[in-house]
Length: 272
Image 1: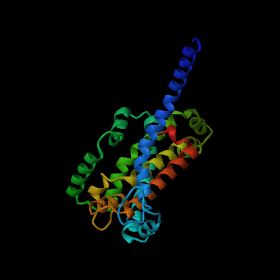
Image 2 (image 1 turned 90 degrees about the horizontal axis):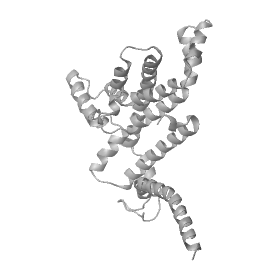
Image 3 (image 1 turned 90 degrees about the vertical axis):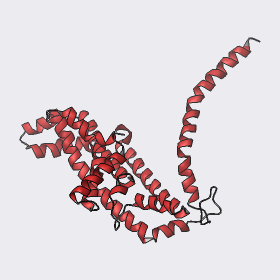
């Protein structure tokens, strides 16, 4: 009789300690369930989406890779994402460095303005840019679309570089200047290696955000050139087939691979 309460107390402690991991696993499974469904739907032998899949085939992947519309859209998305990422790295690093090291007047206001795209809904930004580009006659051009993607990717570079600069010692650059290095040499030889993890993390994050973007791109792409996510979105309106699931699976795998490499290389979680 005396052992039952003791066993009951131990059981309660065991269950309470086990509850958090169980909840975490259930939450993770719930979040990943749509991904699993897309992957399963991409290998079905039927011409329509079905889960669980009927049979197993990779023909839908081959069909998508041989489709010129999808490959052209993928190449265009890669060019656009690389351009936006490069501009974000250059301008974002310069802005973050000026705000932290140069004590620019009104730094908090400037930082809030540059970070605003993280707060405003993407559709609002897209509609505003659409009206502006239509007014000045730049709608549909690659440069206008690249600037639009620069606006939505710049905050990610700034956030990661600001974190790296906050954790670096500013006296190292001052010491380099004291020893005879000019401003550019001191920056590239001392500060840049220290903030490289933040640059890598911000660059990868910017590339993923730009490549996967739909709300901004769908308002600004031209008829002749479109991004891959917009192409997928347009194809869904005419019907869903396993080919769309196949290309979505490839995008999911590519995005996941980028995140894994970033985490193992620079500790991505510190800047996310």
